[in-house]
Image (tube, rainbow, N blue to C red; front, side, top):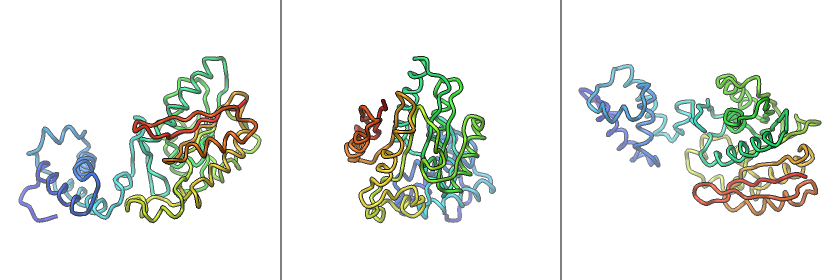
Length: 295
């Protein structure tokens, strides 16, 4: 960042946008605004009505550090250690995948199903979330579903991710409703049964990881990305083992990658406990969630 007599909100945003553009950052202006609004502890709209406001030296120093990290393609969520999802703020670290808007389709599908199940008279509802990462899926369901007594068991094989999930549950006031388990998919939940089993598992084919955006390939945990040779390894395991852990009339809802929905639905339909499947599209029209309904 060049020497400058006085850096104002307007001038620092303009300079940072240009710098990020040179570095190949996909959304240079947006990222500059998000970082600066975080430093100033203000909403982004504040920046637009205070263009001429000068930055204090401490604010400028903090912002410089953020710009350096983002310029090296560290995802903004990792720079700030936080990400908003479903109207909630989650802590993120490099042990966790960054929650993405596409996954809101999975959460909404779960909320709708659980609310309908409760309205039909079901009690003591419980969900499982496999490969929970930040806990964003299960915790968002717990927050948004108007289902008294709803509980979640969430699982991650990464001890670091499990720590983050526990911190997010506590931060959101949901620790008593959410139990975090360390382990491999359904293994820690043996002997239990669920109204709904959720997952956004790793689904990138192993050979495709090298071609991902630098932000994703370099910084996000490959443990949460690598779905095996064809990207379907975790779907095979989940659809083989999860149906027998459903309560009567329960369901499995799982996020899928582009072009994977039909294959994952077929895997689910091979299990005798699954009576039908449903594909749900995201806002871009991509089949993003497979729901498999149990008997």
